[in-house]
Image (cartoon, rainbow, N blue to C red; front, side, top):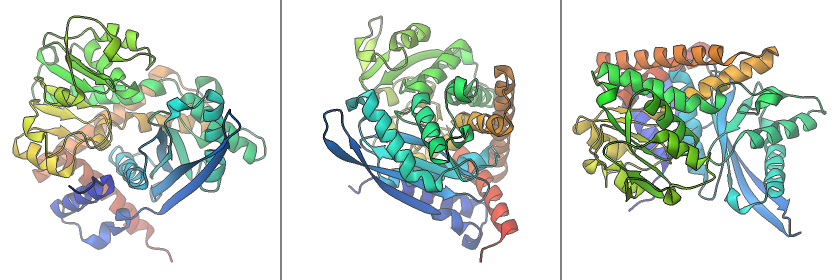
Length: 418
């Protein structure tokens, strides 16, 4: 079997959406190629005195509509194709919610849990120094992603500021701690956005949330916050999972108790005790539920398991969890999929709010941030829903069509340099 390439997955969907909306290739060909791919070597001194060299990437997919925007992930499986795909999805994510950003992404090939805090700081600072020439508040604005957090962004911002001459440039990254320019509401934004899209989807499908069961794959920041908002909204969460496995109870789980136990990743579900049966991550995907929320990594729903999906609706909280082949099977089976570029865009929307606050040296209260998030997410959902009905296509193709129209318009108006 050929190795899964997420960038090929992205290109296939773009071409399908373009064909469905009658685009000529000349009108959108620029978004099929990343503008810039940056690979860096990162030598750092370990606590033992040994020098190790790590590999890092930063890809800027498109800056047509504004500065590149996208997270930095620390994971042992990071590779250039994954980073390219994530950067491209960010371009489309920002276009579908209509904020003035392009798409970028970064990563380091490392298992951060094997490093001390001091080693992690040195690695982060070295990475920031190496990508320094191509990032900046008007160029490319990093953010947290898999295995990175506010502390990592604080170090990146400080390193960039020192290299700029020692003055504070807090607008170079988003997802920082509140005390140094972060935004209220940012840590909950992706999960809150997913819940908003979920509630809007249920309304359109005439599904009563109190009669709806959910399964959430992945209880990291995005999955746990999504599960908490869905639970608070009256949904019955029957299954959740993390890297150690999953738990299932058809009558519903106590999500508040589970999230308190997990305590932001300090513990694992394998050590949680209660009234439930233990299941694997793969079994969770095919468990008996109404709404499946994949919130882990890409390439989870594939041609091998799509026929066994029992959910009536899928809300993609992770980036790229469904392959093109699986998408076709789900469409044929009549299972609507709310795509990642719409469903999980709450994080980048509030990152935009943080960036605006930093540029203006202002500080918004959390209600204002959440009001902006709700307005933008609901507007984007309505636009995608309207396009799906108009073109008689899946929600994924509709979201890509919405994004492509905006990107193609920008390309046409700006023209081609030189």
